[in-house]
Every structure is written in structure tokens, then in C-alpha cells.
Image (cartoon, one colour):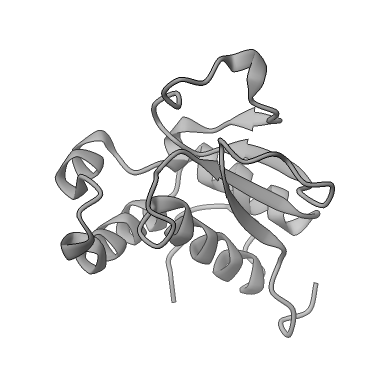
Length: 135
């Protein structure tokens, strides 16, 4: 992958139907989506630890007024790295990745921050070893 091309990392609500080009579909919410049976969610993986920490999630509360501060705090959590974030970076290096989330607000949800973080990590050529420090 060249630096000129961002990896194909998409976001999609869990309640939307899958599309043929989704690639690997990964649920990135810490909690299972309300009203959804496990058998009804077409996904390949559930990586809970790629989601914001419980404290950060509760603090944000999907309040758009806290969005910018949430983005900064969540990026700091992601930069510390963990096995689930590393797995997402590795998946994005090898093909299309779709991050599944349940939040209602299409403009203020953690999968958008995660999408940008994963794209940047892949573009920098990181293999996912060590902290994934955002440049």
C-alpha cells in the first residue's frame, strides 16, 4: 500500500444490511447492540477492547458538545495500543475493513475516530507493534 492511498476502512451501523464490498466486518462496540440477536448480525469478529474505555464512554454519553474532547481522549487510549487495536490495523493492511457500531448519531460515534486512527496507523506503515502513537 502506498502512502498516497488510504486503506479502505469503512463504518456501518450494525442495523444496516451488509454490502458486498464490506470486506472483514468487525463489531467495535464494548456492549452488545440493543435489540440485536447474535445470530442476526453478520460479522467476522467482535473486538470489544478497540472501543472506548467504560469510563470514557460514560463520560461522553453521546453528547455532541463533548465530541472534540472525546476524540482527543479516545485517540490517547488508542495510541496506548492493545491487542484489539493491533488486530484492526493488521486487518486494514490486508484488505477492506468495516467497523460496525450501534450509536444512532452518524456524525458523533467512536467508530469514526477509530477509522481515522487505523487509517493513519496503516499509512505510517505501522505493523501494530508497540504503542500506536498518533503523529
